[in-house]
Image 1 (cartoon, rainbow, N blue to C red):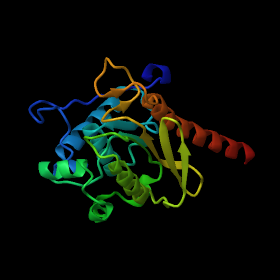
Image 2 (cartoon, one colour):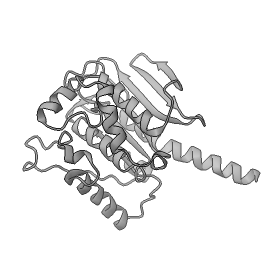
Image 3 (cartoon, rainbow, N blue to C red):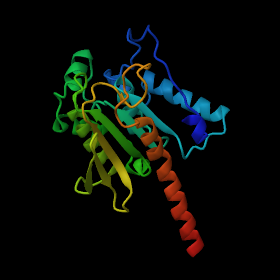
Length: 246
């Protein structure tokens, strides 16, 4: 998909020394801030990749599954001026834990929006930094590892960060999924949530040869890439039309 789109893909890896499952330690409080060890390391790799390659900095995106989804959400919240969009599969609400015990509670959906909204408000970047950020969330209805309701909580956290009113909501029902979209005042989709029927803790689509995949589901990689790139193209077209008219 990257080759088809002419994109570069960076795959940061966790070490066994830092986590025996090689997961990001998103639940540790210092890793929920941009200058924390893991976010800073990933952001450093992004900057290094941009320096070494002809990267269009208006098209930098971040995505992940589970612990990777949690880290993607943290990066988007903490460095929104860098990323144009974020894709989060089986994610966990922002700042929902500060230790391992809290991580399991958060994964099970035991933390409510009211408990963590004040934390998000204190740690967010200035409002203008979120002007271009867009968010795509995915969850499986049968996910027994990360409760599906977490994606709804995370959606509302990002609506708060992006300054988008929850009432600007539209819903689409498909045989395999329910899709909810929230638009800003200009009609631009800023947050989109996909709930996949019968999917557990997995990436929607893909091959059984991979790990944590759900081949019957919609091809999330294609849909996410379209979400990422389509908005930039639409805004470019809109600017071009405006300039032509002027």
